Amino acid sequence: MAIDLDSKATKDLETIVANCVRLNRTSDPVFAAATKILETRRTGEYNMEKTIAAIRKQGRVRSFLSYKDIADASGLNWVKTRRGVGPHLDALSHYAVEQGWPNLTSIVVNKDKVETGEMTEDNLKGFLEGVRNAGQDVDIEDVAFMKREQQRVFAWCREEH
Image 1 (tube, helix red, strand yellow):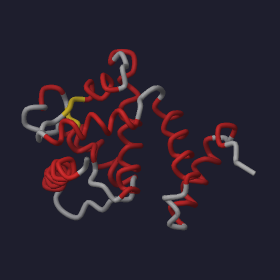
Image 2 (image 1 turned 135 degrees about the vertical axis):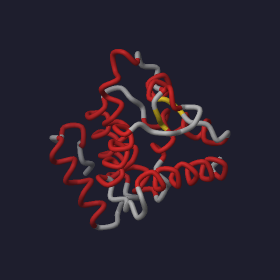
Image 3 (image 1 turned 45 degrees about the vertical axis):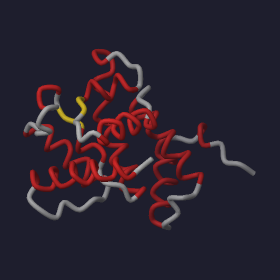
Image 4 (image 1 turned 90 degrees about the horizontal axis):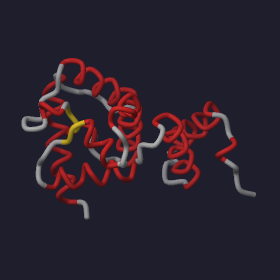
């Protein structure tokens, strides 16, 4: 008998996801489905697959993306959906960690920082909070960690097909 995940309360879906992680069953289709439903509930219309594709495309050429680029990848109006980008990137942090990937969100920066990949103090704080909430260990100084993750993302994007 299949589980109707769509009818589950958000708290129940969070419990299912947490149990899959705890039991090391992140490859279970129920985990993937519950994670996707949670991400949609948290971030509205942002599309995880489209975000990953945009990051892969830019990462292959060692280029950064803006938060608006993430909205554009999902075909969303940035002005109307900008508040949802933070939760969307947090969900992506969780997903990347669960997949054993580098933290893909490290190459998403403010529009005026796309050339350098630097993060403002607030953006760095949000990035690191998302990283830690996803269970990733920040084992070196914050800026050095962010830069290391960016290089890991670029390397990963070149390896992935």
